[in-house]
Image (cartoon, one colour):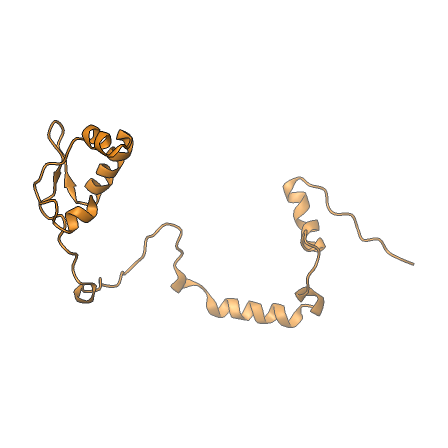
Length: 142
Protein backbone atom coordinates (compact mmCIF):
# COMPACT_ATOMS: atom_id res chain seq x y z
CA UNK A 1 0.00 0.00 0.00
CA UNK A 2 2.83 2.37 0.90
CA UNK A 3 4.53 1.74 -2.44
CA UNK A 4 1.25 2.18 -4.30
CA UNK A 5 0.83 5.58 -2.65
CA UNK A 6 4.44 6.59 -3.33
CA UNK A 7 4.17 5.56 -6.98
CA UNK A 8 0.86 7.44 -7.26
CA UNK A 9 -1.10 4.32 -8.22
CA UNK A 10 -3.44 5.38 -5.42
CA UNK A 11 -4.23 9.10 -5.51
CA UNK A 12 -4.56 11.57 -2.66
CA UNK A 13 -8.11 11.64 -1.31
CA UNK A 14 -8.93 8.20 -2.71
CA UNK A 15 -11.05 6.03 -0.42
CA UNK A 16 -9.52 2.76 0.68
CA UNK A 17 -11.53 -0.41 1.20
CA UNK A 18 -12.61 -1.19 4.72
CA UNK A 19 -10.20 -3.31 6.73
CA UNK A 20 -12.73 -6.15 6.68
CA UNK A 21 -13.14 -6.03 2.87
CA UNK A 22 -9.39 -5.74 2.21
CA UNK A 23 -8.61 -8.60 4.61
CA UNK A 24 -11.16 -10.81 2.87
CA UNK A 25 -9.84 -9.85 -0.59
CA UNK A 26 -6.21 -10.55 0.35
CA UNK A 27 -6.91 -13.57 2.53
CA UNK A 28 -5.40 -11.93 5.62
CA UNK A 29 -6.63 -11.40 9.14
CA UNK A 30 -8.54 -8.20 9.77
CA UNK A 31 -6.22 -7.41 12.69
CA UNK A 32 -3.21 -7.46 10.36
CA UNK A 33 -4.90 -5.08 7.92
CA UNK A 34 -5.95 -2.78 10.77
CA UNK A 35 -2.36 -2.76 12.04
CA UNK A 36 -1.07 -1.84 8.58
CA UNK A 37 -3.65 0.93 8.25
CA UNK A 38 -2.63 2.22 11.71
CA UNK A 39 1.05 2.25 10.70
CA UNK A 40 0.34 4.08 7.45
CA UNK A 41 -1.85 6.52 9.38
CA UNK A 42 1.00 7.18 11.86
CA UNK A 43 3.43 7.70 8.97
CA UNK A 44 1.12 10.29 7.42
CA UNK A 45 0.12 8.31 4.35
CA UNK A 46 -3.54 7.96 5.36
CA UNK A 47 -6.24 10.00 7.06
CA UNK A 48 -9.11 8.52 9.03
CA UNK A 49 -12.18 9.84 10.80
CA UNK A 50 -14.56 7.86 12.95
CA UNK A 51 -17.56 6.83 10.90
CA UNK A 52 -15.89 7.75 7.61
CA UNK A 53 -13.77 5.88 5.13
CA UNK A 54 -9.99 5.83 5.40
CA UNK A 55 -8.47 7.89 2.61
CA UNK A 56 -5.03 8.61 1.19
CA UNK A 57 -3.63 11.79 2.78
CA UNK A 58 -3.31 14.90 0.65
CA UNK A 59 0.47 15.10 1.06
CA UNK A 60 1.06 11.34 0.90
CA UNK A 61 3.61 10.13 -1.58
CA UNK A 62 5.46 13.41 -1.76
CA UNK A 63 9.16 12.83 -1.76
CA UNK A 64 10.95 13.94 1.41
CA UNK A 65 13.29 16.89 1.17
CA UNK A 66 16.77 16.18 -0.09
CA UNK A 67 18.93 15.60 3.02
CA UNK A 68 21.76 17.57 1.40
CA UNK A 69 19.58 20.72 1.44
CA UNK A 70 18.09 20.32 4.91
CA UNK A 71 19.87 22.67 7.30
CA UNK A 72 21.37 21.01 10.35
CA UNK A 73 19.71 21.92 13.64
CA UNK A 74 21.36 24.45 15.90
CA UNK A 75 23.54 22.92 18.62
CA UNK A 76 21.78 22.44 21.94
CA UNK A 77 22.73 24.60 24.89
CA UNK A 78 21.88 21.73 27.23
CA UNK A 79 21.00 18.10 26.58
CA UNK A 80 18.25 16.95 28.93
CA UNK A 81 18.05 13.40 27.54
CA UNK A 82 17.39 10.83 30.22
CA UNK A 83 20.42 8.87 31.39
CA UNK A 84 22.95 11.15 29.73
CA UNK A 85 25.36 12.80 32.19
CA UNK A 86 26.94 16.18 31.58
CA UNK A 87 30.13 14.85 30.04
CA UNK A 88 31.66 18.31 29.75
CA UNK A 89 31.70 18.53 33.56
CA UNK A 90 33.58 15.28 34.04
CA UNK A 91 36.72 15.97 36.12
CA UNK A 92 39.21 14.63 33.57
CA UNK A 93 42.29 16.11 35.22
CA UNK A 94 41.34 14.64 38.61
CA UNK A 95 40.56 11.27 37.01
CA UNK A 96 43.91 11.25 35.20
CA UNK A 97 45.73 12.12 38.44
CA UNK A 98 43.96 9.33 40.35
CA UNK A 99 44.68 6.80 37.59
CA UNK A 100 48.36 7.72 37.52
CA UNK A 101 48.63 7.44 41.29
CA UNK A 102 46.84 4.08 41.33
CA UNK A 103 48.97 2.69 38.52
CA UNK A 104 52.24 3.86 40.08
CA UNK A 105 51.47 2.49 43.55
CA UNK A 106 49.62 -0.73 42.66
CA UNK A 107 51.60 -3.96 42.68
CA UNK A 108 52.09 -5.73 39.37
CA UNK A 109 49.76 -8.52 40.48
CA UNK A 110 46.90 -6.01 40.61
CA UNK A 111 46.87 -5.93 36.81
CA UNK A 112 46.55 -9.68 36.29
CA UNK A 113 43.56 -11.96 36.39
CA UNK A 114 42.58 -12.52 39.98
CA UNK A 115 39.83 -14.33 41.78
CA UNK A 116 36.64 -14.05 39.65
CA UNK A 117 34.72 -13.19 42.83
CA UNK A 118 36.76 -9.99 43.13
CA UNK A 119 39.45 -8.72 45.44
CA UNK A 120 39.50 -10.56 48.80
CA UNK A 121 40.34 -7.28 50.54
CA UNK A 122 37.41 -5.47 48.95
CA UNK A 123 35.06 -8.39 49.65
CA UNK A 124 36.13 -8.28 53.29
CA UNK A 125 35.29 -4.59 53.48
CA UNK A 126 31.96 -4.89 51.65
CA UNK A 127 30.65 -8.16 53.15
CA UNK A 128 29.53 -6.69 56.48
CA UNK A 129 27.64 -3.87 54.72
CA UNK A 130 25.44 -6.29 52.79
CA UNK A 131 24.77 -8.78 55.57
CA UNK A 132 27.22 -11.42 54.37
CA UNK A 133 30.04 -12.88 56.32
CA UNK A 134 33.54 -11.82 55.49
CA UNK A 135 35.62 -14.22 53.41
CA UNK A 136 37.74 -16.59 55.44
CA UNK A 137 41.33 -15.55 55.95
CA UNK A 138 43.86 -17.16 53.61
CA UNK A 139 45.45 -20.39 54.76
CA UNK A 140 49.04 -19.76 55.81
CA UNK A 141 51.59 -22.42 55.03
CA UNK A 142 54.47 -23.18 57.29
